[in-house]
Length: 274
Image 1 (cartoon, helix red, strand yellow):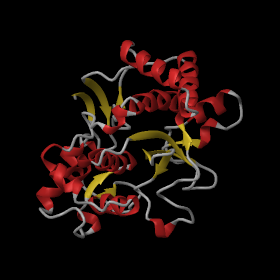
Image 2 (cartoon, helix red, strand yellow; image 1 turned 120 degrees about the vertical axis):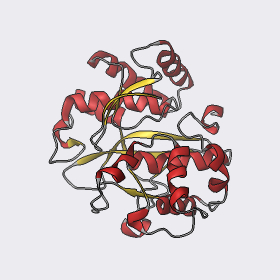
Image 3 (cartoon, one colour; image 1 turned 135 degrees about the vertical axis):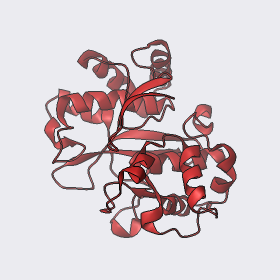
């Protein structure tokens, strides 16, 4: 639990930590502040040029906040025009949320999986925050405007983790081709689910990589084993949580190192030191 109270190399806000401290204490208010800083590079429906699209590769909370403050050197709660907010995706809304929660000493982590609430016949890949409220882990989606959804966005009733989707696929319970980035794109299916298990493991270990960062490699069998550990850990199995952490740290084919291959929707395709 303690490690989820501590900032990761990605969530550490650095000199901008005070800005996060000024956000509202309540979870819905905090998430509203995060939405005021970021705009989704695709879901917003706004077109951005190449220079702006590069903002989606700001993999560190400190960098996101730096870009914001260069544009708006005021408190994060001060209104920003939507089109001038920092470009990001679900991962970035989540990263700022968990960074703010960790600043308050609240255990928080990033969860990788799929959203069943954006469309009836498609499960978009998605990342949400999860925080400990003193009794249980609670899922929260800072990207969502609560006025647009018939459920509590600060206590999600439904989210499919990458491990859950993978195991359901392996058991023949779902159509893997209905899980991916977008119905109009080829990023879906068996390989996409496989890659997302590795991404979920990394985020679970507080390596909150970009969704388009690539490293390591896992087989179907390894994904089965990791998914089982993730599901057991989610059920409260402390031994499974420890085994997962130990395996991640000891296996170079799983662990996110200091170099990744970034294949970004911004158009960037290359190796990056992190």
